[in-house]
Amino acid sequence: MKANVMTAIKQPLETRDVPDPQPGPGQVRIRMHATGVCGTDVHVLNGELPVPLPLVLGHEPVGEIDTIGPGVRSVRPGDRVGVSWFQAGCGRCPYCQKKQIKFCAEPKTWITNGGGYADYMIAEACGCTLLPDNLPWESAAPLFCGGFSAMSAYRAARPQGGDRIAVIGFGGLGHIALQIAKAMGHEVLAITNSPGKAEDARKMGADEVLVVKDHVGQELQGMGGVDVILSFSPSMKQNNQSIQGLRPGGRFVTTAVSGEPIQADPVSMLFKQTSIIGSAHNDPGDSIDVLHLVAEGKVKPWLETYPIGDLNRVLTRLEEGKVRHRAVVVQA
Ligand SMILES: [Zn+2]
Ligand SMILES: [Zn+2]
Picture 1 (tube, protein in one colour):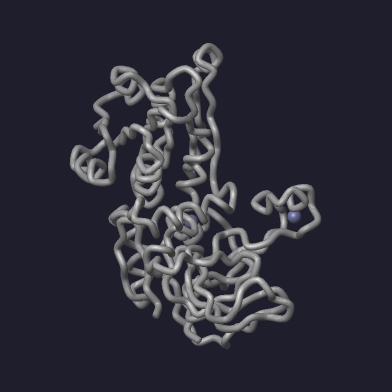
Picture 2 (picture 1 turned 180 degrees about the vertical axis):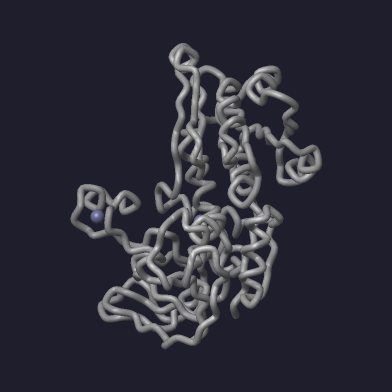
């Protein structure tokens, strides 16, 4: 098969002919149809998240199961599936015992099994999620990391009816989170630095848009404050300021990959009883719920699609911040 392989840090992926992979016990082989291109791919390529090389990247993969390994009973050849980052845990550690494989120190992931930027990939059968029948491949793919993260961030905020929710950054994750919050019936406020993005935010369903002038927290307060801030921005200066815009009992959810610290005023946190919450892929059910919201047309990923042959160009485009708002490579 053809595989797009990472062979070195900060180098383009290399297209290689490699033997067709064979599924082991408990595993399946998937014929790839589409794979979403995630910002984390860029972090991996830049060496910020070390992985063993050579390796096939691509952790938003969807396709059709074509072969199952010994002992697989849950999924069958012909099933349309997607695979998220964590496929299985060791089964024995305290976190696996609590079915929290996301915290297992020895998980099976795309890093151990290989990712989706190839004709075929191997996945643990228990890591496969069936796709709703009417959901196109290219819409499903970005939900296995971006959409999953967005839904988990929303849920991590413990949202309640009537909560006013702000979203900072509406790239690959944020534009889905904004639509999830709207679909769940909240008043949604989009925060951006760029007046040119205000119209897009409204089209995504934002009730109000705050174009930041100077201090986002003070400007949020001036608009009455918010109960929840979902931040998908790596700008820690802006994130830190925004915490001042929380109402009493408010929750700030961070999903950013950044080397800078989150800082908040402890006295204000004490009196207002606010929380700062880290979130990634939390409950596997979050990914299934976002698949259904998209299949029902309540959330619409804004996509750029490309043939797999353009993968290196797409990764460059992503690194340069030019993707609006999620890129997907189509494979068959
Ligand atoms: Zn474990
Ligand atoms: Zn990702």
